[in-house]
Length: 226
Length: 244
Image (cartoon, rainbow over all chains, first blue to last red):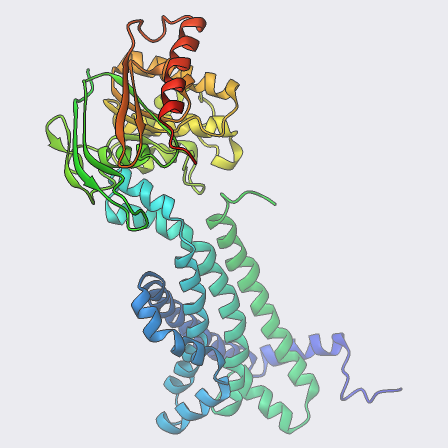
């Protein structure tokens, strides 16, 4: 055989290994840990980033004051933030989640800020002409205009989070997909790495096809098909 | 039911980008339930005047009263913009309900029926033609305030067939509700078709260059009579138009 099978396991072998790790190994608890971290970081970053993004989009002064920090946040290497936080806060769960949040936050802010800037002032006029109450304008005019940007931020943010959570778990944690892959790495256990990656990809597909796409379809069903 | 009286007395209205005031010592009284067309060249201040009556533009010196009440404090007018300005994420029915929380689904459906759009309640704006979108906008305006209608170039960019359709719908609505209507247009034909009175604005600051009251009620004017009125207004507009 041209390649040693230990380094290039077949899909069948990987599939079987996924089953073994899920039933007798630590695959499910590890997936659970990683998912919990990712979901918490995602929710916090989306909520904070949306609020800050709206603020920067609405206030020119605030944008002038803080936009440089957004640029810094967008470009500082993720690993730097993680290492600094691990040094300051220790190898804790809080430090890991905070590092993920800080890495994703600028992306959400920048996307939402652009969304707010793209609001059509004609609709503000509509709200004024018919004296629509503020909350009604927010619900029926502002939020629907922002939703495509929120969904874009969610989608790009989620893909970023999956990646960096794993990297930070490699760097310093006591469990999770990233941690386990780093252990497999030390033993050159390619089959284990592929098995975990496969399981992880399956989870990502579940998010994509059972949550994000139906949500997107529901929220943006008014859009003209292209 | 009758429409409100409008008392407009603008001491001054300026825009930073204009060297001269747009309006200065401008006075106009619009009788209840009359249909008044404001005609004049682009940029003369017709739409601004409409926005002041609608209470959208409050940055001016002077007063604009709707039935004795400051425009901004008066009940919102039924405003029709130059474009349909429907919210694309809402259906025709929900677009009507969006601007007034008290409007029920049945009332909104009834308004759509009155503008000839029964069966299109659950269509999104992109699924409607341009003319249908304008009719939804008209239904929305009427559902908000059937007593005062402010129309800002409502027929712009529609072909003449669609304009006729819209005018017919307007005729019926005006006849049944007797609202006060302020119609901004740069086309004398629209004024000749719909208005009881046409006011030609010209110059800067804008002033009333001509004020026509038509003896023959709208709806009873023959084509020739409408053309004669339109020609008269057009001549008045062109003689007042500043040289480029």
